[in-house]
Length: 602
Ligand SMILES: Cc1cc2nc3c(=O)[nH]c(=O)nc-3n(C[C@H](O)[C@H](O)[C@H](O)COP(=O)(O)OP(=O)(O)OC[C@H]3O[C@@H](n4cnc5c(N)ncnc54)[C@H](O)[C@@H]3O)c2cc1C
Image (cartoon, rainbow, N blue to C red; front, side, top):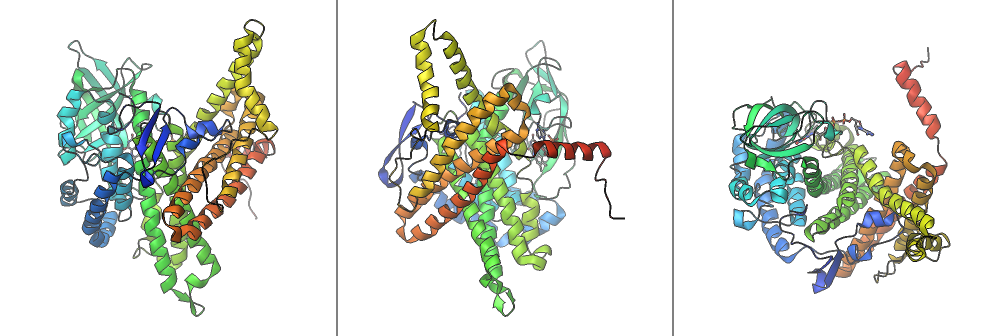
């Protein structure tokens, strides 16, 4: 089964779907927008017009948002108490079950609500607007804990587990991280040995597992051919002999949600509980994480919306110098920046959710971009909202400090933002590198096979030549509002410049590019700004056309985002060649060698 959500049908290359205003939209499922941007190309059909939410989702979301608000809105005091006590009461988890919040993405035939990825992300936005720990409990279950069964489960596994996962009788967790294997997930030591009867004996320890203390079912990753062997995924029930759980971790944030170690001491796992193919567990893990990223992004957007609301109210109520602080330019600037960041994160997250729902085959780079952008936008919003509340925000009577603590996990788990930036850059550069080596071999084979050789030459080299001379810039042809046209021009221009920078960097560093993380980060940051920026322009266009009254606001948001992105892109591209990387490296080496900072004023 391919790595798509269960609700997505198997996909022809382009798939007509009904979207906004009944227009037919064709998504090019084989093409990654982000990877093509590194060639200076804009896969327009995957960006414009901005996708509307499906009609069924809209209807269901209306009811669900109301039910979630009805249940969670009066629990603000409880959430703060549970944060301090570091516990989520069993009766509350039971109430989440009864609300159907463990069944969100499970197909209807198994008793689930069969929400699309987009609708699921929207539900997590709503729960996060009340309390992040609630989102963690239901999100770890759906986004990663049981997602493997949806993506890779056999019909028997689905029939056996999905109905009980839907009711929440079984709560799921995802067990990858170990004491010695965090970002380097491929280095896990948990081992599974095959027994003569085909079953497996599983031994090892997983740490920091969300829902670890309450999960009944875990997706566990283990080595199956000795220490250097391949990784395989298993479905493991925590009631089986040999499974033990550690204490509830005392965390900085999301304190009420369960995080615990899960240990496996010679646990017998039946042969039929292998998830996916033996030896293909790493692919299973990465597919689950890629597919689940919009849940985290949706949660971040929900949190930002709450912060904007709270900070706005605080700024209007708090008076200093005889006026509400909301009248001061520096406070207004912070609120505006939160709105711009939130709109941008929302535009990118729901674009990626749409790719997943439409059966895209290549969305992992865009998913990583949306996670990096949304998680960092949420950090900025939490920091600035607390700054607006200032001293009051620092006190635990108000929820700002909890938002800051809760948000801090977002750039750490489900792939740190450092690792995801490297992934974004290297995945894109790999495609460019492949074209360059094709080009090299095409040049070499021109004399042996002129037609094939020239064919390949014309494909990439002509495009690059045309871009370099300015005539080959890829244009957005979608009829944009006049206010947005110059913004699209900026992104077209920077896509061309990024393609040039990628090409030059690969020619200069060749394989050595893999060791140049500063360069990779700059490439990734330009790609993040380009992809998010194009999503912003597309969404602003669709929003303003659907609701002309909001046009001035959303056009202004898009303009501010674009100006800021342009400054960042310009700086990042320039620093590819003009930088102080050598000095930075020397400073780091000095601090590491001397064991810290070496100077004092005395
Ligand atoms: C609250 C919480 C809940 C979690 N839930 C789960 C869960 O449900 N399931 C699960 O399996 N795991 C879970 N995790 C684990 C989480 O996914 C890991 O913490 C994360 O993958 C990072 O691993 P690490 O903490 O060991 O950091 P490390 O890998 O040790 O990284 C430390 C630092 O080095 C950087 N770094 C590492 N390698 C490189 C590199 N090659 N280049 C540049 N920088 C690098 C990292 O970005 C980071 O800044 C959870 C963690 C927490 C804190």
